[in-house]
Length: 367
Image 1 (cartoon, rainbow, N blue to C red):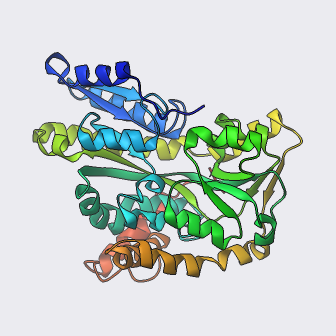
Image 2: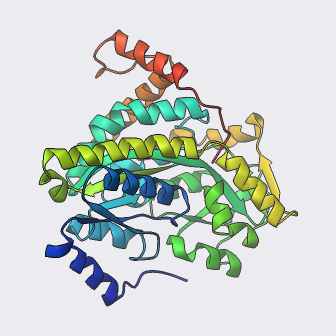
């Protein structure tokens, strides 16, 4: 089933919400179901905004208003005030956002990963102007969990992906990444994944464990493989014209709600991966769930350099600056290395290290 067609009634409802009597109702769409990670973040954001202002947040889960491209268009046009969308889908608008698909760039350790998203100069300083150029106010980015492959056949090496039609998001760098892995990348909208696996149009796809479980993708595949190459990242944005015209007190309500929702969603995800994998194993005992060893991951990791070079070619005018800053931010989050040429002083790096150690959460191997 697909969701490309948006009913006239849905659009009418949105437009009514934008007029006079509903002026204080803000609309927020996201790419997942209400009880999935993006939905949980949105619910917390709604709770905080409504508790601290007279405004109401109306939530639109995946499929309500169309596919990812549809809700982005609605956010840019001002029909939606807020949208949550992965950089995987915004890569066409903001090519620099494709950096999140350089394999093995983001760390597997949860403490370092969270500290990176909290403190990254790339995310908090370099990305916002790029989003602003597209009419979007970047409120936050957050991780959703370790990305895993689901396939019909066992995957232990890139050779096992030879001629495998593998669904990817419509993202050029992700296509290059899976070509480097040896697969035949096949871009498809989210709503078409299950049916394409079921009918054999594709033989594999990637997503965090919670999404594999909730969308029942394990029903139409036999193997889940953890190669440790990526963590699913998403971005919460506001329509920039809407945001810029708000009074300062409303901007603060939104910023505070975003911060509270970020803290909440990080805590919510603790243990979520293993819980989701356990549910999958219970629902389909014969499924094989494999975590590759470091030796088995080595050939996949060897592709990272070529994908990184491709990112520098297609990632936009700020690609090199973004990549360099992310590497510096990751080093700072790990408590080692230079913070970057944009760092204010060595004390800032020490503060980042202290924060990372003080806020360490129990490391989970995926999401």
